[in-house]
Length: 162
View 1 (cartoon, helix red, strand yellow):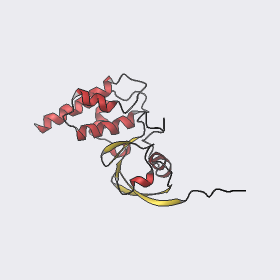
View 2 (cartoon, helix red, strand yellow):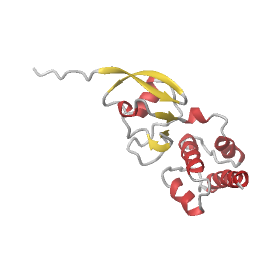
View 3 (cartoon, rainbow, N blue to C red):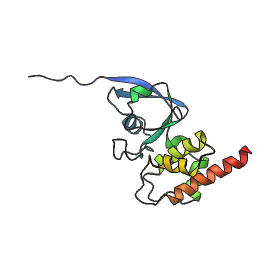
View 4 (cartoon, rainbow, N blue to C red):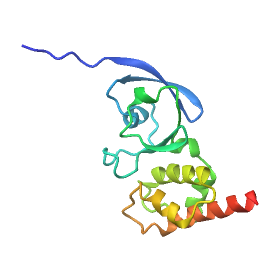
């Protein structure tokens, strides 16, 4: 009788939302699983689990990443920002002000993605906004409210940069 050995777990340190957190993870554990199940950070949502919907989006080194496709052990010592790290941020406020929340399931991924868009491209064109929004899927809205929220942020950024 062949008995497969259980995958070994190890203690890892993740830099999440400005804090160093300890988690126990197997080498096959996704960042999404580790954030939700080991660290209790449930902003990144478990949805498609194959990188198509964007509900699990987090920032790794400031870049939007689908956490369902990243292994936790691959991002040790890299700065990770989750939706929880953007609490009371301008992008979150813009989503509320422009009613870009609908049912709310996809909202955390959109907030994280749009935060990166506005941060990395403060002069983004409408075409670039459209391109960035394609990485997240929402089944409740036609995206107009989300675009309005992003455009309000871009306009306020352009005003303060002039």
